[in-house]
Image (cartoon, rainbow, N blue to C red; front, side, top):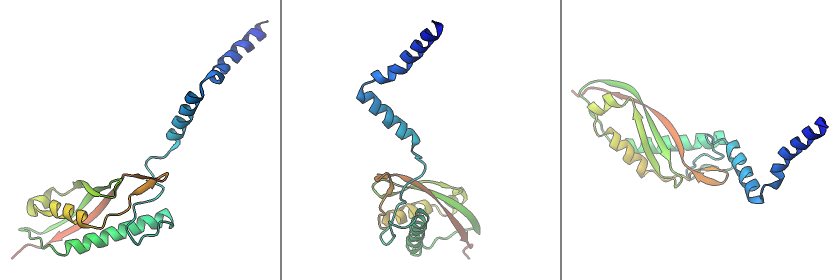
Length: 161
């Protein structure tokens, strides 16, 4: 008798899920699916024109980074920075590629010494990113998403004089 009561109790606990509405079951499946997605990785990196969207993710990232560096280098060649002291520093530019493809500077690390010597540097970098051709945004499950990148930049200046 105890075994029968235990089995019935166990069956009743399990049967609660069978009484759930189709909407609640669908909601549970969606929640489970969302928990299983790796939101720190994208299915396709942002791509500039000329980058192959069918290439591997590694090749996509390399194409994006090299095109970005090419455009940034070309843009920075137009500027002549002057400094009162010799500087040698690596700064890290954190930027976001928005879901619209717009490039936004988020933060510049290790730029305090540079800011004192070349106050217009941050603005020049921001304007250089804005003037670049707009990339196609990163994709996650076919949906455009924001993606964040870090660009190290070696800065070396020689004193005027």
